[in-house]
Length: 210
Image 1: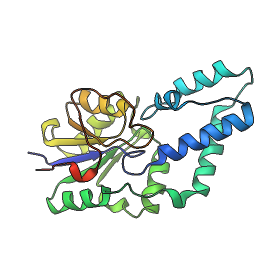
Image 2 (image 1 turned 180 degrees about the vertical axis):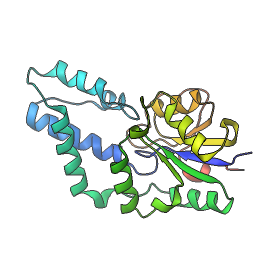
Image 3 (image 1 turned 30 degrees about the horizontal axis):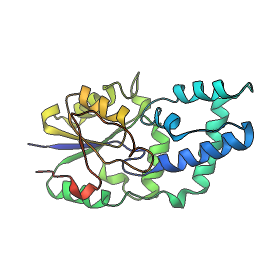
């Protein structure tokens, strides 16, 4: 019996990833003449950006300050924050979970401030009793630590928990934590190959909570 749902954040609840990809692609092309294929960007969805940095390094002789680059891209995204909305069906699923008295949490590889700011923007911060971020763990997804810590604080066991993800890295973390996992891919993750142990749905409305 499910007692809790743990959502990934970026790309799952709010499709920040499509905007991140667009901004990354545009800035890299404009400033460094580097083309960023979606296949390369997808490698870092749900985890750290090291693989992306390595790819960019391999494509240019220019020294790039990636901390500065990410700040620039994040600033551009926040300028277009109105584009960031809850994915279709997510609010209804959260409402249904609440009606069933399920505990609801978030486990995300992103920084806490980023998540909190966008949750406030889309007006669902109060829906989550637990939020675990990269600030809470020594290693992000695909390491299962985020999910393990979220379950510990929610006071539930793996077989009582459902994880909802959009990426391969995120789903591996949930699987390794022993949690039943479903995927609702977005525009930049729908082409990925997912572990056979997960269920892939095109819409949040397809997810059964009972």
